[in-house]
Figure 1 (cartoon, rainbow, N blue to C red):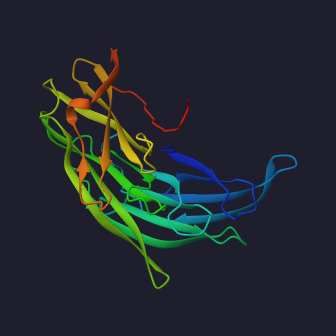
Figure 2: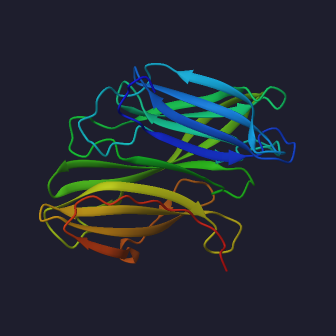
Amino acid sequence: NNGFTHFYFDAITGDLNGNGYDNIIAAWESSNNSINIVITEVDRNNLSWDDEKVLTLTNVLFNNPDNYNAFRFRIIKGFFDKDPQPEFALAYWNSSGNIEIKIFDIDPNSLTPVEKATIADEYLNPSLDNSGLYDIAAGDFDGDLLDEIVLAAYNQYGQNDWAIYTKVYDYVEDNSSYSLIPKVKKDDFYTSDDFWGISYVINNLAVAAGDFKNNTLDEIVVDFVVYNNSSEARNYILPASINLTMDTLNVDQNKVLEMYLVNGSSNLNIGVITADIN
């Protein structure tokens, strides 16, 4: 990586060209606040790389965030349009301090990524403590058999004044032109007023979507870490649902579940996925 020391990466898999075999999409941060996205085609006979396509987004990331835990970018797979192949979404904290979300489709013949839509309407103030915490997930919240996107992010205004918020985006086609349309935003998804302790703040979060009710609609769950200055970290999850018109997000903060407590540390690495495991 040419001596570049800050190394952030992510990867997903999916059958991007409809040939029945999965491809790999890997992304990593490189110098000059850039993101490299590589789409590899795997030789299924020996599991070696058969071909690859590279897309570089140059000078797009926020420069030198103060928060060591800040997320540089996230990449997810989703079925956003009506064809049977998945697309992928990339979210990153851009050079202006906004969370920018891009949807890419894949040319099935060349595996070249093609940007279809972008939006950057949520600002994370870099001057705030623990700024740059966010995540995205894909799920079908309105029952149209296509995925939408949910964003979860964090703002910390003071030691006992903070909030996790969530926002939903619809991916809309109009005469072969695509756009991301903001829908419901829940500014007080979970706040310092909902938490029982004082002098606690958040330094990590993740979001996932899944059909928890077996009603063919996806709900969401936010996973987050609360810590205090005495080096105590607590991990919580909180589920929520979105109505069909995507103008209301229903969350009961009393349903928050503490997963575990760690003494002697203020940092926890977390991740959350959903699946029908039983």
